[in-house]
Image 1 (tube, helix red, strand yellow):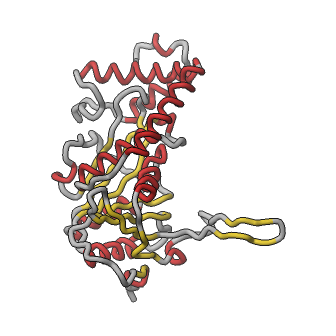
Image 2: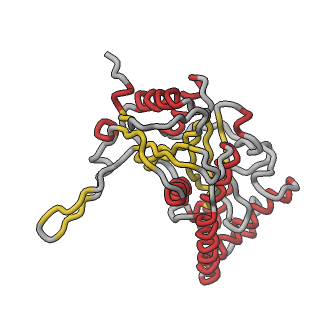
Image 3: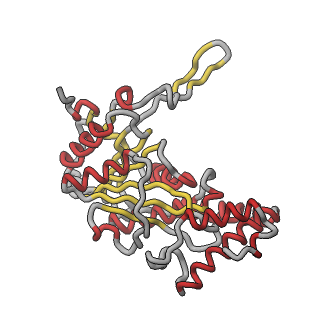
Length: 307
């Protein structure tokens, strides 16, 4: 007997007319290099008033033993429990246009049922576009132009973004499955992956989050303030430059990646990976190979014929 997807969530009784709204989503637990997606979600919630209008049943969707929630122990008793939440927030952009943000841990169970539940909310509220976002590692230096990879259920939704040159199989995610299923169901859906230098993938990298926010704003037409994220980006970039300047080894790695990046760009006459044609665009594996070769033999890196 099939379980009803509507049993997975509860909706607030006081939800305004949302016809034509956009639903953004970010799930914790999948790849998010530089915490780019997390930074965007936090920025949106911190920059505008919001309230929860739908709440998913995390007891059915989350494996607590694989991602144990935090509890606080104080001297002789349990003081607090950080219960996980998978919720839909209602926000307004700078022009007062309402939009939705689905955030929380990526479900461990019932992916198909969860997707059907989100579909139910999309159709219930007449959502026009569903959009996800996160960060991916890129084998390129932070000193060169980086950007965003886009994908969608219709070519028109990708806009100016260049497609990746490769056909590949990657580990699945709820965000990816949502977009795939929405395409089958005839709903517009898109996703954006910010490029993050792989040596910054484990750190918070606001610059990539800023690119991600700008891409989401262009695709959705929302007026999303970016001042706080832009300020955090400047501070983080200054700190990265300081650390690079203080470490000759790190500086050597960055220079090696710059040389590799520039070699590809000079060969094509382009200025960035975003402007590169799909036939000649270097993959992360190609640039990452050069990075690994450098780490294995820094002194002989520039003298090898394969470079």
